[in-house]
Image (cartoon, rainbow, N blue to C red; front, side):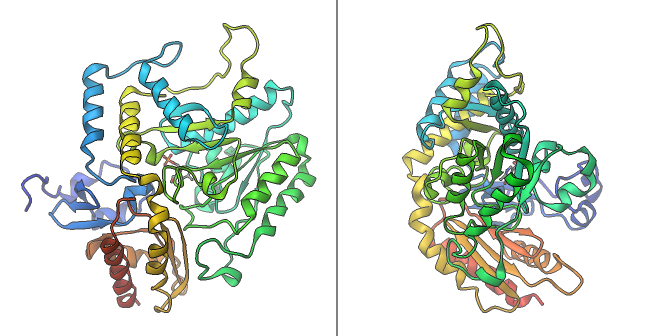
Length: 445
Ligand SMILES: Cc1ncc(COP(=O)(O)O)c(C=O)c1O
């Protein structure tokens, strides 16, 4: 066994950690413990090498073990481990905001820092309402989300989100007045589309129906993920996002793109809005911002939003919102080092270079038993399996576990297997990932 790895803890030692989004009893009966990571690989606590097909959890875009990041964080902790950003500041917070503004889509150059995607989403929702109020439209408080949307786990995020398991027991506690667009996943029309599906742009027109129902004057913002990952990879039909933008513009409604997984190079440019050439009013990010090393999120707002809020007496706090750890110095140092890596290694555009080979690789799984759809864009891929009768998710779980046992980590949502590898992946590793998945699907009934 590798001397650097810690021994497998006993089963009893697993009890105290109430694991997130995990079947705790099932996991603790048969745990999968990761102990070390480098480049494209994890090593398990018992020393097995595992190819990372999901960039941790859609966040380790530059690959694991980046010493530039750990050195920057260690240096920052030695220099100043913490500084408040309420009525105080520290230089690298401003430096990071400027760096992010220079990468951002046009105009999105006012940056609010958070610690996670969920906090970014709740922050964006609050900014949207505050903005409308500041410009004299305080009745605009409704949000329109989308079915199958995932916007984290805060009460705001689950209210605009559309994943039933995350919402069903909190019905009466969610934000009032939220409505949802239909999702855009349609296997009947779009199964095995390569890249964006061509059918479904008209689904954006449902926004007009919701506006007619609620009246535009009550709606603050529409929030969608340009590509959703957590619901099992749902792609926007060609022209769909542009149509949403047009309708929002027509009715003076803000458009929020949740780029928590698409941000920082996942689909071939820094942000999905640049790939799709649709600029939102607010953009939420997290994950790849620090390569997953230190928790951090950032909300990008159009300057008009920030400017509208900068009114009243100069000593008045304009937005009563913030986190103790907004722009935490260690997170800022991690993010700056991460952005350096992305720039120096051309990683923000690498997915565009690899996407054709990636598409061919994932679509090579077509024809295997139980494969009912394959979806891809940038360095995102998903294979949807036919559910076993009466046991939704069981086949997907078996495939996920067997892949892990054979040294490949993928992500399972129900019967969808999602892949989103670090952007440093090499063609031979793409082949290994997909061939292992193919072998496992063949061996799984
Ligand atoms: C689109 C989107 N928004 C928000 C989140 C929540 O991020 P976090 O888990 O960092 O709170 C996620 C997480 O996967 C996400 O995919």
